[in-house]
Image (cartoon, rainbow, N blue to C red; front, side):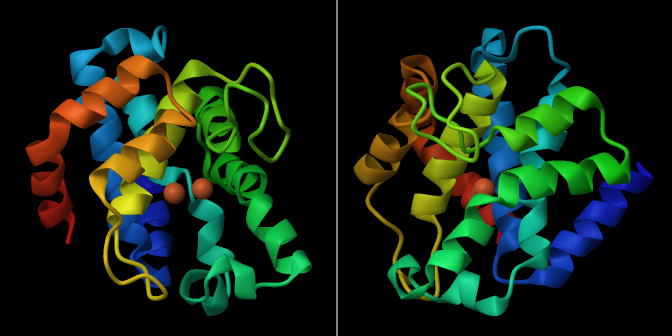
Length: 188
Ligand SMILES: [Fe+2]
Ligand SMILES: [Fe+2]
């Protein structure tokens, strides 16, 4: 409990929509698992949700520019720091006292099934990490950004999710439709 409060406090203090995003990804993951629990087989729902809530914990250390500038205006060094956030965030979460599976899921939330993800280009990431990654990609597309105030269309959000998650996850995200909008307004 202390861990969640400490992390939430840190995420909220960061601003830039990070708390909304973290809550939204955790709620989306729970919504998908409610319909298809097998996507995180053998893991407690609360652990997957906590990993989803903490997935971007290292962004609490990011300078403002990383949130506000489009990626093409950032340097090569900036991109290296950005790509390290799953690894560093997993370490921060470990320091806060999360279990090993939560640490692993945070570390792998930007890995892809085809080995094109980061930071380790894993060929076979944990299925629950792919679920978190798909919900993350979907939510990110539908959230406003300083450099892109309007959300992207839903079909693009689903396409981004499909680069990470399995077909079942994407189909559920598609079906959530209206529910997602409820989640979005609840978190705002
Ligand atoms: Fe991330
Ligand atoms: Fe994220």
